[in-house]
Structure formats: structure tokens, C-alpha cells
Image 1 (cartoon, rainbow, N blue to C red):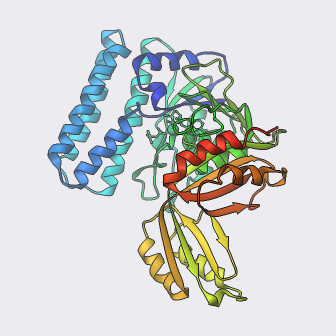
Image 2 (image 1 turned 45 degrees about the horizontal axis):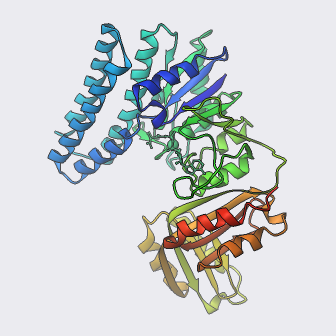
Image 3 (image 1 turned 135 degrees about the horizontal axis):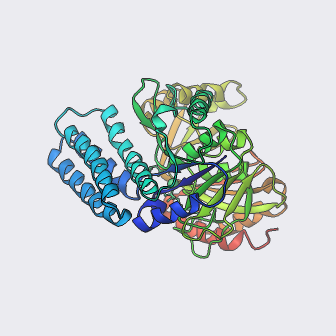
Length: 441
Ligand code: ADP
Ligand code: ASP
Ligand code: MG
């Protein structure tokens, strides 16, 4: 059994949903089809939640109406028969009634997460209606029945596997299962989600849970490119890469994959394929355990980074200093991305600023603390980059015109990371694009 996940743009227009239908009905292998919300929907739902949080009901109402009209225009183009259209109308009615009820009750975070879940429920129900109209046998699975996260928002993989296996066993001989990406239940049994872009994570978790033959991520581009195509000109797709390389790129900003979406597939060695719904015959990117190619493969960038420097003469020749510093970040559940140290100072980067003021207050007891906001981590990824001659030189040459705040090299064998002010991001990425790939392979 394989997993086929389709992102927002792949289901965002009626004709695209028809293309998805064509893709999932090719070949005999049974598949679990994971769908995102129609493109733009989750952003719109975020907007509705924000309006309600700000107690601006008329704005929330307006945003609900706008989204509602989008769906009312969508379904007649998707479906032909009166029966299917009536069914779609009822589905849309049900979900928008739910949103409208929320206008009348007091708002809280749990309700916000309920709002965010509507997108994937709508897209999968509409898609299931299309399959029914075309007499394509399929089983509709509600992700809320098997996808769960614990109190630290970590997916409960063994529970997911147990529940999903039991559900699938109730449908022997079925070949197509349709379910929602992104949404799940939390430890309080409330509706929750796997964070923005989380449908990739759902696909990989399901792939791991059932030890699928492949996890296909169908999107709007022909695979992982060697640089961010939204920022840099002349990027190109990479035919294959290792799980480690892909995980690093996803974590450091390659939007094509959710940051955490590689580990579940990697744990069970399920190959991940990045494919283009609009160009299904394109090779795309194959992500697997081992690849032969060495040298720099791709570059990704993560914005919204804050660098914190703690300078202390007490660090000089002292042991235990780093532990004390790290304990503070641990206490506030704030992950650190990059670290560099000198004999008298340590710099770290974080992207979660929810506890910044408390962290800074506690760090102040160790020495002088300096904070730089609006930083970008640029991550240069490849197989064995730390053992390939000339990589660091080509990176530094390309970055010559820009002030580099931190460099991290040798922490892993497949990554060099640098930190600079976000104003230099575009120029630095473009310069790296021209400088570091020329001698590759
Ligand atoms: P989906 O809705 O299918 O999940 P996303 O928008 O989340 O699609 O991810 C695909 C987009 O990721 C591409 O359209 C592209 O703009 C962006 N992207 C960023 N970095 C990369 C990269 N290195 N390779 C390919 N795409 C990338
Ligand atoms: N619909 C969700 C989002 O826009 C999840 C996803 O598309 O992966 O973030
Ligand atoms: Mg995505």
C-alpha cells in the first residue's frame, strides 16, 4: 500500500481535483490518499479565527461569507449530477453553519483549532463526492479517529499505527482510502493540527504507521529544487537525496516539505517521492536512505530567527556553563537551532519567541546578553559536505559581500549553516546559487 498526498494547489480548482482522481486511479496498488484543504482555505480560516480572537464579529462574518461563496462556486464545476451536487451543497452548508454558530459563542483556542480543521474536512468530503459520482469505489477515513498528538504536540506513532491498522482491517479488498492531512486529536481529545503545512507530516506518519511501500507528496513543482524557487532565479530539481539531506532542508525552510515530515518515513525506510500534479510524468525527487552523490545539493533559508549572545568571563575555563545556559531554554521548551561558542561567549539561535523575555531575564544572571532579531539561517546541504574539499571556501567566497553573524560547520556531515541579517537573504541566496554548485559532483 502506498500513500499519495496532494497539497492545496493540487486540489484548489475543480479541474485539478479531476486530475487527482486520474492519478489515484492509475495502477492496482492500494493507496491512502491524503488531501490538504483547497489552496487559500487555511489562510482564510486563520483570518476568521483572528477576527474572532479580536472580537471583531462583523469582520469574521464577512470572511466566512467570502469563503462560503468560494465553495458555492467550486462545487458546480466539480460535479455534474444533481444528486452529487445536492450532496456537496449539504456538506458545504453543514460546515459553514458550524462556522456561523461560532460567531455567537465565546471564542477560545480550542474553537480556533476547530475552525482550522474545516478546510481538510471540506476538501476530502467534496473529493469523496466526486469519486462517488464517478462510481469509483473508495473508503472515507476521518483522520480524527486515528491521528493523535501527545501533551508535547508530538505525534503518537504507535497509537496511530494501532488504530489505523484496525480501521483498515475493517475494509478488506478496498483499494482507495481518502483522508485528511493536517488535522488530529490532542491529549485532551480536542481537535488539533500538525501546524501549517502539516499534511506532509500526516502522509509520512501514515506511511510509517502502515509501513507503506512509498510516500508520494504531490505538489505544484517538479520536486525539491536546489534553492528556493520563490527567491532565486534558475533553480533546478534534484533527482535524489538522502533522508538526512531532505530532513535538514525541510527543517531549514524548504517549504515543499513540512519541517518534521521526514523522520517518520525515515524510521521505517519508506521512500518519499516529491511529484508534480500538474506534470505527473516529470521525474521529481526520490528521497531514500542512501545516495551515492556527494557535494552540495541544495540550499534552504529559514527566516524569523533571533540570535542571542551570552558573554561572560565566568565561562573562561569553566565547565557546566553551557549546561546552565541550555537548561534555561529547556525550561521554556524553546528549541535552539544553531550554536557557536568562543572561550568567553556563546551564541544561539531560536525561532520561537513566545518566552523570549523570560529567557533573557534568566540569561542575564550569567553575563551580558545581546539579541539580534530578523535574522535568517541559510543552510547549505549535501552528502558529506564537511568532507568534500573546497565546500567551505566556495560558501565563504559567495558570501564575501555580506556580514555573516554565525557559521556552523561540522555538526553534521551534510550541512553548513550561516546566519545573516534577513536583509541580505535574497542576494546571499542568489550569490550562493551561482557560486557553490559549479564544482559539484
Ligand atoms: P502544497 O500546497 O502542495 O503543500 P507548498 O506550497 O506547501 O505546496 O510547497 C510547494 C512550494 O514550495 C513550491 O511551490 C515552492 O514555491 C516552494 N519551495 C520552497 N523551497 C523549495 C525548494 N527547495 N524546492 C521546491 N519547492 C520549494
Ligand atoms: N491546509 C494546511 C495548511 O495550509 C495544511 C497543509 O496544506 O499541509 O497549512
Ligand atoms: Mg505544503
